[in-house]
Amino acid sequence: MKISPAKVFARIKQMLIGISGLSAKLHRVRGYKKITIVTYHGIHSGELPLGDHCFMHLDLFKEQMHYLHRHFHVLPLEEALQITDYKGKKPLAAITFDDGFYNNYSQAFPVLKALGLPATIFLSTNYIDSHNTIWFCDLLRMLSQTENKTLMWQGKRYHLKTDEQKQAVSRLLQAELKIKEPHDAQQALQALARALDCDLDYRYREDSPFYMLTAAAIKEMSDSGLITFGAHTHNHVILTKTSLAHAREEIQTSIRETEKLTGKPCYSFAYPNGRAEDFNEEHQQILSASGIRFCATTINGLTAPRQELLAFKRLFINTDTGIEVFKLQVHGHR
Image 1 (cartoon, rainbow, N blue to C red):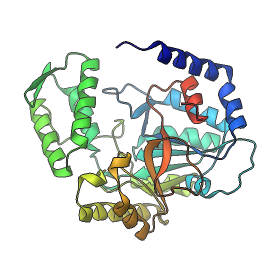
Image 2 (image 1 turned 90 degrees about the horizontal axis):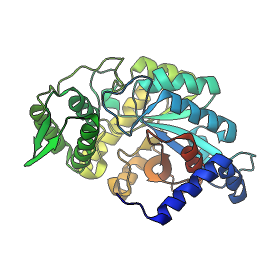
Image 3 (image 1 turned 90 degrees about the vertical axis):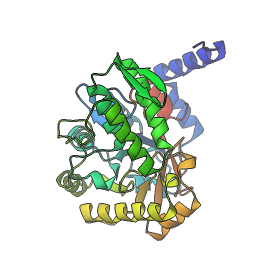
């Protein structure tokens, strides 16, 4: 793919700003009126079965947390979103995790605890205390395990000889399944399992990056006072891909289960997938009526306190986001 000279120049400029430390200085010039809310999913310390943008290596995560600790005033999410007339010496930030992977406890929590950094974890509650996981992790696992060198899918042949080819197929299939209704997506996943000669019925263990949180781990993190929990639907259902009645059930069940797991009220929710087309005003009305005050999207950007509380922006931190690019992101330059 050919990159235009303008894009090359822009990337070089961004890199130089990050390396020189100008990103933090420019943040000061622009003022601290907005909050930097970073988003993670899974954190791993070993080798992934198959690379995916939702799973970051622990070493990179540590480096990013140390940067936030030094250069930002990191607050609990709900506190940051309600702050008024902030006059601190550092910009505001909040840390979030979507889905509820066990490695949020085993890998990320010790780092957060050592630095005293609060965070919010949004739970897909049906997977808690189970050996099951979210469908895209099933897909990653099957693609990593299959011995097939090709995949015939909907009249097309896809090569699976290398990890790079498998990752490309994973991205394509994830995008395809996301636009389906939940029942149709599950049927497609079952068909893919047959095509890949893999078993969809698989018991994930604690040593898998795809293993989900346990009730005991949630209780320990909640009791620490550092970690707050929000809802993320019961089955990680994209709200606009199902009926309003089913969306209501998914929302209310996840809120109820989150409160049961923590023993505390649940005021926060993250939209699965989280793009503007993945939720609407009817969903926001259901959430508000269910006691939810804060809703996280995956729409990229900094967010203003006390504004768009039912659809606030966040920064998605990609798996391969190096520290210099991270600096640009969190200071609002990328």
